[in-house]
Length: 545
Ligand code: ADP
Image (cartoon, rainbow, N blue to C red):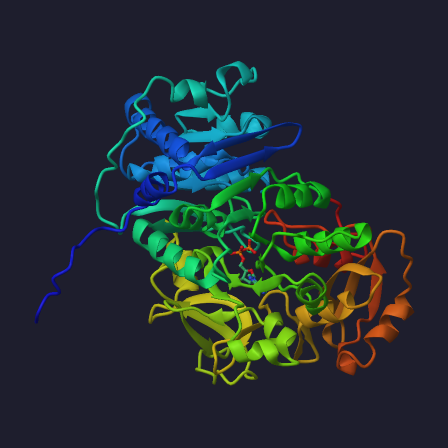
């Protein structure tokens, strides 16, 4: 055996903000807040304030290595400081999704054993109602100036700015084992209780390198990044870390943006890379077209979390000249596992957009396996379909304090079950056919809800569509199509069915088509198939948001 003779520098999250402040110190971090002036400062400022936060955590709150600190907050510069100040000292940043049901929030905070919760002012009332049921929480830090503190019944509440006041702006981050936990994020719990994914410093840094490489469309990609994804969901797809690694201008928006405000932010800040779920981009596309606008600086638009319709991809690519990256991943995988940067030769092909509809290509560091129901390996030939299993240094090896979920989610030889039904071709292009729980099972065969939705959204009058399986006495399930028409458009059931005729296999034809003003969305902004199934199984209408 011969050991390599290289430095064994641990991969730690604190080093990212050090790098950004040292070499990209004057690049801006911008926070847009509805109804208030923008907040602007630099990476140098962000590091100084992360350092003050780190001192406050240790000296004023008694936080040490391994303690969990929850955030209950939208995207903002203070949330960004927490990303580095908390993890930097070896504590664990637990980002809680404020859009979850209160029972889930209670479960998550108690299960994680969070010691403090850092909360945005407008979210204080949710926690006030829950606080008596959160016995492990020592106190609450409201993300505000002292003067902006609301009158609150939260126990041991203090303003963020008061907490970090008069503390040194310098810090030497402690050096520790890179395998220690850095952050914690619970899956949305669309089935059963939410499950905790506990990222390590090592997994986070390796994922950051990989995601950065996988998103580099051109030299300009990282001029300015705007994540439309929330910082409480899978670490905003790792973008705060990517931004610090590459020194990108980072634009943070609160989540209440409508397409016109998002458009404003993208244009004004010269955003070159932006990332979000398909619903956001469908609305943006409609907004651009109806107002005759273009996105003048966006080079790459990354879309993940659910399958984007082909017609939308084609529009962004061909009508607007924007590189559309379909990326696939999940909370358990940090999340990036694929991105849709095609092979060079595909660019010249007529099937170019078909490649783009696939959920990207497998990136280095991620291993993939396809299996059937009995866990026999299937060929990756582009047509065999089965459950996708994944493995790699930024993929969860288990769930935090949850042996049951770990046993169910991880195979005996250490693969994570994704719950996605996919096919993979020989070049590593992944096609997500469906989530195993959303696939429509009709007469012993599968109907892909994703393909059905894609076909429906190609109709010029359709804004958004969702296909769900409704119980059927003979076929077990039959597809129902729920459609949101574009504003001012009137559609009829038979018009949609005849549009679909010839575009889908005959037996996929939805038994019924219904029209609604809005589809229900999950806490992470995806269409909630579960609530649609529940509403329509009982003959009702879907719950409005
Ligand atoms: P949840 O949806 O429960 O909040 P995640 O955010 O972890 O949990 O979502 C991961 C899931 O999202 C994947 O397992 C997959 O079903 C779906 N998904 C993610 N990206 C894509 C994509 N590009 N195309 C299709 N489905 C996707």
